[in-house]
Image 1 (tube, rainbow over the protein chains, first blue to last red):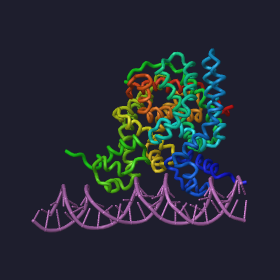
Image 2: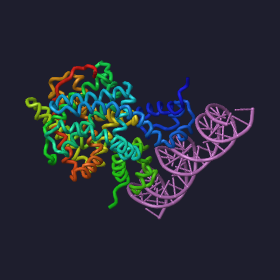
Image 3: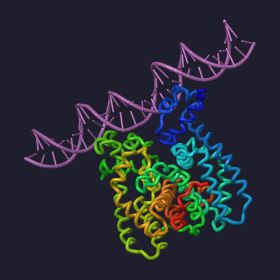
Image 4: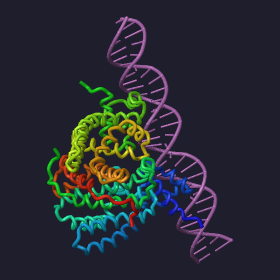
Length: 217
Length: 217
DNA sequence: TAACGTTTGAAACGTTCGTTTCAAACTATC
DNA sequence: GATAGTTTGAAACGAACGTTTCAAACGTTA
């Protein structure tokens, strides 16, 4: 049985958005590759912005459910900071892998969505994401902060975004990096291997000594 | 005396590209804000791609000169890994600050250029950058690698890009992050303060224990 | 000043984009 | 099987884009 129009559009859009970005992907590309009429997007999603938000929602929904469960468990532990942070990052990357079904374009989509939450170029998406997923985001930050006890609020804020950047860059460029790696080191690495490397680096960066808010000189 | 057309275009283009990205910035926006004729871009730079590459060159040229000097000095030191890495990251961020003249949009431009070197969306820029600045890039990687002696080549490759991602994300979103920080923590942070935080985290991430290339599970 | 190469200005070209239109096809209900 | 509501299809719209054209203005040299 043929998949419904809405799902076909979402599947294709999610792939193309992940591979080429929101602006660089046209509705004509999406609809033709999905085998549906051009007008179907505006009929079912109202506009291109509506489609982008729908893609974001379908992607984030299972991720938030999975992370919510993990955070509930981790939130009760308070003793071993190192271990909790390790479990937290491992869980976050595992959930991402599961949701992304190990395809690079879906992983890249995740990174693009996070990036959009901070960029002004997709203002509608920024507003949508911050309104929709702020609670989970804040819970994640709160648990992380509890296990970085040497920092004040602002120091943690900056540290958090350093960690986020490390993840986002690796995720969004995982395909290109894996390609370079295959050529330079003759090693065909898959996503689970790449992300495994990330965990201990994230933990170490979390545990790096706190620097006073002074100017770089 | 009025600045020459070419420089006015480059100044405006660099600002707009940094603030809104290459695709999202139109030649009409650049030329109108620069107060020059629309056709001037194609006359002086051949095409929009030519303009982007010219902007990249004008930005990277002084950066490469400054970094070359720093790397020559650092390349002779071999004893204290921690100290050399600290100096290296501090130097890199200081050079970036100098070149970017402390304006967020120029810092963001730097991050966008680095990102383009890994993205397929601006293929011409990727090729241009890798051909033009590969030597400096490789020298930087080589010196860094010498001070992360516990890693093999491939492990260093991944670690390097984790560090790069941390920098790129912080640099490209520094304006948005500073704005959030000002609201949440009533602290007006400037770029030198933000980047100072980054140095010790970069070093710690460099010194994080090496993980075998296993799958995340 | 005359002539020539360079630069600028205003307009248009051809494409692509998101969106809209509206008739045709389909589907569910009575 | 007729009807009403939903979905699809083909075409067009208006706007924005990069690029091109070509005459006018400028600057330099003889």
